[in-house]
Each structure stands twice: as C-alpha cells, then as structure tokens.
Amino acid sequence: MKRRDFLKAIPLGAAVAGIPFAFGNTRASALFDFPMQKMLQPLQNTNDNILVMIYLEGGNDGLNTVVPFEDPLYDSFRPTIGFTTPDEKNSLIFRPRPDLGMNPQLNALQPLWQENKLAILQNVGNSNPDLSHFRSSDIWNSASDPTINVPTGWAARYLENLYPNYPQIAPEDPLAISIGYYQSAAFFGSNGLVNIRIDDPRTYLSNAVQKNNAVPSTEGGVELAFMRNLISLSNVYAARFNNLFPKYAVNSVTYPDNQLARDLQKVAWCIASGLKTKVYYVHLKGFDTHIGQFSKDPTVGGHAQLLKYLGDAMFAFQRDLEGLKVDQRVLTMTYSEFGRRVSGLGGESSGTDHGTAAPQFLLGSNVAGNVYGKTPDLKNLDNNGNLIYEFEFRQMYASILQDWLGVDADTTATLLNPEATPSKFETKFPVNASGVTQSLFHAPLGRVTSSTPQNESILDISPNPCRDETTVRFQLLQSENIILTLHDTGGRLIRELYNAKLGAGTQEIKVFTHDLASGSYYFRLQIGGEVKTGKITCIR
Image (cartoon, one colour):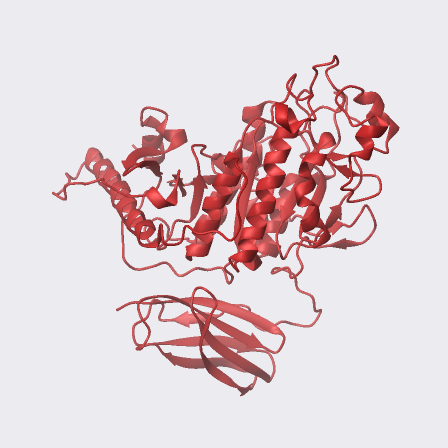
C-alpha cells in the first residue's frame, strides 16, 4: 500500500484532519512522513519572509466589505442589505477611494491604510467559477485550473520545493503551522500533510512513547515504521515548543476578545520566538451568509460581526508584530472560496447567495498599500447575475510567491499549474484602475529592475552543514566592492567577514566557524546594490 493510500485508509477522518495525538493539555496533529534525522535541510530560499493566511470560510460578500456606494446600481440591487440610505452611506467614513467605502466594522484598519500598509485587491476570482463550497475551496487551496482536479495544495508544493529532500531530511521547525481545528487542503503534499495543527504552542507537550524493537520486512512493517516516525516527529517538535514556550508567549498589545484575534496572537508568539516556519494559517468561519447577513450592527451578529472580528484582529496583529520588531518579515493575506451574488435574496431578513469575485486584503509593513483594480462592474454581470473577475486568484498567489517569498517566475508557473502546461502570471497590478501597474510590495524579491545583466543569484555555501569551516562561492560579472557578514536567525550582526573590492569571475571566501555554537546562521553578501543571503547550519 502506498503511503498516500495508507493515509486515506486511516479511520476517524484522519486523511482530512491528520493523525491525532494527545499532547499534555492540548490536542495536536502529527502530519508528516518524517524519518527523524539531526542534520538540518539547508533552506533554498534566500529570505526569511513569512506568510500568514486568513481563510474566510463560506464566501465573503465583497460588495458589503468594500462598498461601491456611489454606483446607483448598488442601491437597486441591494435595497435591504446594502448601504443605500444617506445615513448608511455617511457611515462609510473609511474611504480608500472616493467611490469606495469600507464597511464601518473594518474601521480598525484605517490607520494601517493611512500608513500604506494595506492593499485592497479588487475583483479576485477565476475563469470557471464553481459555486459549490467544497469544489471552490478545493480550487483555491490547490491553485489549480478549475477544470482539473489536483490532489496537492499550493502552499504544500511551495514548501516541498524549498525542501526537495523532504521528508527524508527535514528542518528543525515545522514547515507550516495551523492554529485551531481546521485542516486546510492547501497543505496536502505529495507525501501527506506538510503542516502541524495545534491549539496552543504553550501546551504542545508530547506524552507519546514508542517501542524501538525491529520492524518486519513486510508492507505492514513499512507502515509500522511510518507510524513510529510520526511519533518521533511529534516528540521532536514538542521538545522544540517546550524550549520556547511559555517564555516567548508575550505580546506588545492587548488583543480583542474574539477567536481569530486569539489565534493570530499565537501566531505572533511563534514568529517572535524565532521559529523558522514559513507559513501560518488561521481560520474564521461563518461567511456563508444567506438569510443571516442583514444586520449591520456588530452586536447582533451577521456579516458585520464577522468583519469586526476580522478588522480588529488584523489591526492588533499588525501592531503586535511592529511592537515585537518582526513586522518587516510578515505578510498577512485573506482569501475566501468565492464572493456573494450581486443581488440580495429579498425581504427584510435577507442575505446573499453564492457568488464569484470579491476583494482580498494584503497587510504588512512592506506591502505597497493601495487599491488595485477597478470598482466592481455592476453593469457587466455573467448569466447568473454574478460579477466577472478582474484578477485570476493565482495572480495574487504568484505575486506572493515571487515578490514576497522570492520564488523565480518559472518555478512559480510550475507550482501554480501542476497538472497543465505552465503559464506565467503577471505580478504587477493596476493602481486605482489606472494604466500604472506595480508590485504589491515595496521591495519585490523576484523583480529584476535593471536591463543590464545581474550577478549570479546563487550564493553557494559548502560544506553545509559545517563544523569548523565552510566556503562561500559567488560570481561577479565585473569588478565590485563586496561586503560579507554573518548574522544570527534574528538578523543581529555577529561579525563582518570581508569588505573589499574583487574582480570579475568566480570568487571564494573561506569562513571559519569553529567558535560558533550549534544552530542556524545567515550569510549576507552585498555586491554593489544587490544583496543575497544564504543559510548555514553549524553542527558539533
């Protein structure tokens, strides 16, 4: 039996929710096929940027999130559930553009907008929308062509690309962490799930034990060894969490009292603790607002209450990251499986049915805050009365992969077209519906800004891991002044290694590491105006 089939055969829904283990006072899921080794996998990416995904489960109503209140068609389509009266329109005091008003329950985000840290990406959808929750969420999580079923998730493919020898050789920290009970298909990898799912990092303590007697050389023995590896992984990560928490369960702000905020608070703990996890995932349910959408009063539930949870939680999280001095490395994004129908269902207690395109938010200190795209076109609807998308959802993913996480364009195309002929996605977006396009980020990692040839982008470090010494190799196209420095995982300078002019060609700098403690470090190489980084692991 193949391990993927074995995972599917595990009872009690384990193929979806992971294999459950009880750890101390909490419940977690071990989700890896992971023969435990002490040697760490060198990261192939050259940055320590982090992605935090917020899933708005159920299909968020974009027209009542970013409201086109100046369009008279909006009033006619939504006489009972829209912001249509003068008083309601005047309540839209947070106006990203003269013709767009943010739902008042998102007013907490206004200071971040004024600081240019919030990007609003309008009309995000796909070319062949499916209005089933299950299929549409599969499409968004797999980042596949809507006509093709793909068994793996886009985040999993990205992480497996970073760790091509995973799970045989694995990192010291989880590749991805999900907070809460919900298991996203975005983390379904080729060898099982690539994330761990926890309730609280402070109580991630392993009580799991196993016998180490030999396993038989049979199919059953292979799977027994697989289960033992799951337990070994659980113990290793439990020890890592136990060393960090509750010491790093600290915050610089007070979070609001809602579940999304509590989950983001735990993500902030993990990031501030120094975990090298690349992707975090949190979940806010309840957006399947049919007849329950009407209320604009956050005290009585409905869509307004959900948006208040979202805005308040995102604001607190961003301010906390800033207070903890880790905000420069973190991008927070929202996504939902679809939007809602343009027209309300009718009646005083009406809501909206399943729709298509909707806005998504990107938040962070390095986000190029602006409105990207046009105001929703209420004159040009599809045959079902739904909005026609402006940006294919994988264009947003491509921007994040390339410009934030540093994946090259060819690899991005492959990651987002796993079962089809890869095609590249445009990662520049029109600003305020104009002809001017730009990246969603201030300093896009994947962007070549010069028409002249660039120095070789690969920073080769060998041996890696190392003990007493290693060598840094790189290419120069012309004579350049270079500065090579060594940093800890928090970015703090340990020492300057080299600062001089070198000629064109292959260059090698030997670095002695005998005085470094076991652990991970980063080389930073500045070549003229270019900066490259590479991770090194020291073992003793």
